Length: 195
Image (cartoon, rainbow, N blue to C red):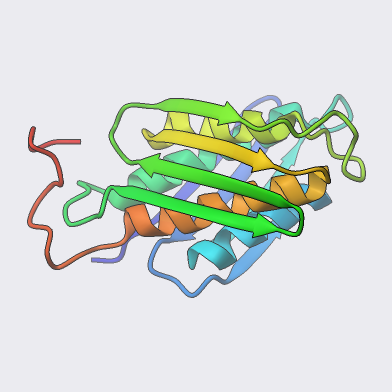
């Protein structure tokens, strides 16, 4: 059975379409009208080895917040849908990734219990036109709608572009590990028998 999902979400603020294939090769076609976010989502697909097609438009004339948050919502929904009953997945994933002077660690538990710990001092200086505060908003929406516990901890870093990139790459690798199927796992990896 193919582990994939298609999401289309339309509100008064945004219009987002997502096609996600968990067992992919890291191919991405991303178009959100926010160049820095496009770059981060391409990294997510590539380093997580997910195939991702995503198109998003929104009221960016107001600011980028609605579109960034709603893309997090849609991607969380897509991962939850693509994982189906979660049988055979590793459930947990951990990764630490350097990006030049920055080092970030991410831990994921696809538990069905949404929770975000976000300890990332990314600063306030814009990355191009992008507000770096929206990185946390993206991860919060993703964790809530993906039904996962997500811990993102920046050990150190100075350049806010590098900090964001280290976080997205570490998240991609941790998510790849957590969603991977194992022939050693029969059913659900939980003593409760459900996630």
